Image (cartoon, helix red, strand yellow):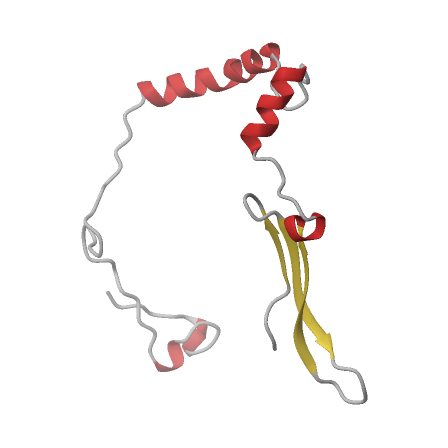
Length: 130
């Protein structure tokens, strides 16, 4: 077994895509080796792409609403989210916070002995000790 196949999508500032996988070496026999296919936006076009803020500011200046959310969509989203937030604010959850590496109380241990292993043993029964 070799390395896993990977599809890597890179976002700003180094936009690009990489595909890493195993490939059979040419010739007879079955020898595999890892290979990579890479696309880097900046080196492929010789210039950097505009930052997200540059794109949004330019769109705002020229009146292109494509990357902006309309007011009615924002209001519809809040109509869904606000009732959930209200319930969460009104509900007190008992969540135990323990110091890292500790438990509130010892956890029960289960041990299997000899023929009492799952799927076999005396009368197909298992015993546990705590």
